[in-house]
Image (tube, rainbow over all chains, first blue to last red; front, top):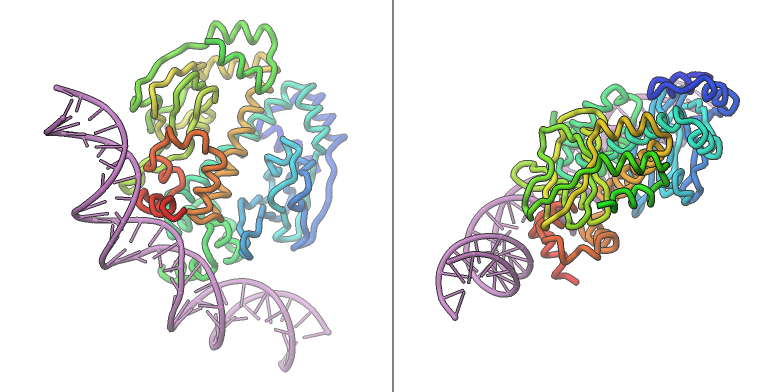
Amino acid sequence: MNEFLRHVNNISTVSNEVSENLQRCIKTKTYEKGELIHTIGHVCRHLFFVESGLVKHFYYHKGSQFVFRFFEEKQFFIATDSFFNNLPADYSTVALEDTIIHYLQYEDFERLCNQHHSFESFARKFVSVVAYTAISNLKGLLYLDATARYEKFLKEYGHLQQRISLGDTAGFLGISQVSLSRIRSKK
Amino acid sequence: MNEFLRHVNNISTVSNEVSENLQRCIKTKTYEKGELIHTIGHVCRHLFFVESGLVKHFYYHKGSQFVFRFFEEKQFFIATDSFFNNLPADYSTVALEDTIIHYLQYEDFERLCNQHHSFESFARKFVSVVAYTAISNLKGLLYLDATARYEKFLKEYGHLQQRISLGDTAGFLGISQVSLSRIRSKK
DNA sequence: GTAACTTTTTAACATATGTAAAAGGAATTG
DNA sequence: CAATTCCTTTTACATATGTTAAAAAGTTAC
C-alpha cells in the first residue's frame, strides 16, 4: 500500500506532513486482465501508480490499435494533457495483466502541490521524466526504421518482452503485426 | 529584456522575491541566422527564452536532418533530458533567423526551484507543457501517414509556414523533402 | 543585372511497410 | 483431451515513401 509513498520519495523526498497526507488520500483498486482503467473521452482525474501488473496507453486509428506507452510495476502514470488541462483524454488505459493500482485524486494532487513545496518538487521531477520519455520515443519514431525501433524497444523494454504480445509491441512501434513478425524472423 | 519574466508569470505567477532574483540572473545573447545556440554532445546548462526569432532542435541520422521541434518568439526551451540529468544533449539547437535569446543558468534555475515554491510551480507547469507537446508530436508520428502529419503541422504551425523551409518541415515530419514536395503538389 | 548559390519540383526507379487471407501454434475452457 | 479461441507466421500483392539525379524557380551577392 505504501509503495506509492515509497516511490514518491524515490523520485523526490517529501516532508512528513506530505507523507501523512498521502497516507490518508491514497486509494487502491484492482483490475482484471483486459479491464479498462481509464477511458478515452473522459477527463483523467487521478495520478495512478502500478503496484503490480502491467498496463498500456492505447488508441485506435483507422481500425488499428496504437500503443503510446507501457507502465509496469512501481511506475506512476497519468493521461498527461487530460490531467493537467482538465480535457477529455485522447487515449484509454487498460490492464494487460491482473493489476493492482494505487491512485491519488487530482484535487488532492493539486492541493498538495500548492500547499507543500516538497510535493511540488516531486511533481516537477515526475513530469520531467514523462517529458523525456516521450521525447525519447518521439525520436525513435522520427528517424529510426521499424527494425531499429524494434531493437530500441528490446533494449528499453526487453525485460517485458514475454509479457507484451506481438500485436501490442507492433502497436507501440507504429507498425503492423505482420511487419514485426517479418522483422523478428530475420534474426 | 523582462519579457522572460513576464512569460514566467504567464505560465505561473511567481513571488516578488523570485522576480527580483530573475531580473538579476537573466542574461541575453544574440545569434545570427544559422548560428548554433546549443551543440549536441554538450550538457545543456540553460533555460532559454526566445525573445525574437526562430530556432529548431535538430539531429542528423544517416545523413538526413531531423527536427524535433521549433521554438518561436516568447517560448521557453531546454534540451530536456540533458538539462535535468546533466547528460550530453543528443541534439543541437540552431537559429533559423537572427534571434535574441534570454537565458537562465541551470544553477540559478535549481536554486530558485529549491528556495522558492512559486518558481518550482512555474517549473512544473513549464515541464508539463514540454511533456504534452512531445506526446502530441509522438502521437502524430505513431499513427498518422505523411499527408496527415503535414495537415497537423499546418494546423499547429501554420503561422510559421513561411518562415520554415520545406527541408526543415520535412525533417520535422520525419519524411524526405521530395516526399513533402509531392504531398504539397497534390493539393 | 548577371553569376553563384540555395531551395523546390519533377521524374524514374528501388524498397520498406501495409493489407488480406490462410495456415500453424499456443493457450484456455468445458 | 477435444474444442474453441487467440496469437503468430507466412504468402502474395498493393502502396507509400525513399533515393538519386536533374531541371526549374527563387535568392543573394558582387
